[in-house]
Length: 445
Image (cartoon, rainbow, N blue to C red; front, side, top):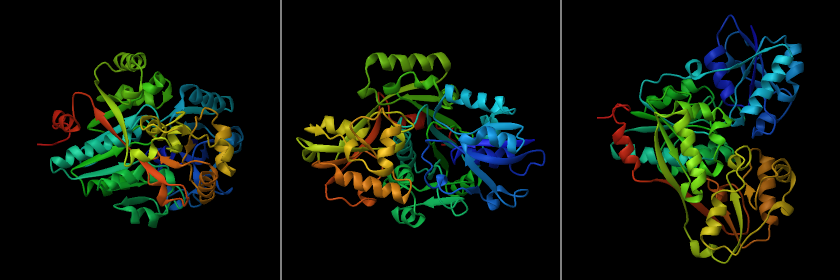
């Protein structure tokens, strides 16, 4: 069987590693890279490949990674029998359009389910996932990590990034501090995923080969905390599966892949950001949960936004710089920076569109839904320079950095930068109480 995997430099590699690598009855002839996804270096050059050292026997030249736009011609050229769809946070319509393209070109179409791709670890796994990008997974993961540490439980966090740059060098990554991030040359998106965990003193593992990543984390941990990327399924079989829904995007919990699958598999569902949502939207989400997964325990929570120096925001003309993935493929118009500007009485949110240059201007052209804010896009050196130039060109008093990473560590501008902090606060409960409730599932005394 000749297989082509449609991906975005993440789940596609995992599906290959766990389902197809080493098989004599199947050959993966190519990956494709999705248009519009934040692939950074994965879009560079015409000979991007999954390296032979990771692909294993049978792939002495590695596996080519081609543009998704060429799907039909690739099916014909490589005589493909089966197309496997392996990326996340896309609508159900998007998935079925991909299926239609594959089948009309003569190939079967497949989605790999959790039984085939999930890995069993030697220690308990608490997985935190979501129905869309930007629901607040990392804040919930941080809450659970703190609660477990209070019980003297050794915790290691495994984060699912989309790997950039040298895939061989990033097969297994361990980050204990910012020096480790600098040494690895990680992108802004990866910093958004890692820095807040490091700020809390938690070690983060990530990489490309998640069997090896999980084994490395498990050697140091009593419990592994999976902090999922986008709305992807957990790569490890969870002993407790917590899934976030977002009433600010009510209805999306049943419209996006594989977020709906997460919702249907959840043990606990957390409805986050309720302090910014209206009652009807919260009710819509709660009814969705009850309809598709009536056995799940549902918890309600707020996303609480603060800044270190609120007096600097009051009366200022501010530029809100927001988490990139949440605003782009997550479809959110604004983020935490905008919330902080409104909460602390900024005089004006400055529209950055006219100041945008290069690749940042292209982001605004592709994502017309964006509000008066700037997504923190920095997936290549060129894009990082464009982000810095755009911020420099905006006439404002203050930059409110609503991205989870320390923006000032990556860019150099004259305008003061105030970092926005946010955390998840559960209603009528605590993360410690949830850990106590599910202690048996997590193998805790």
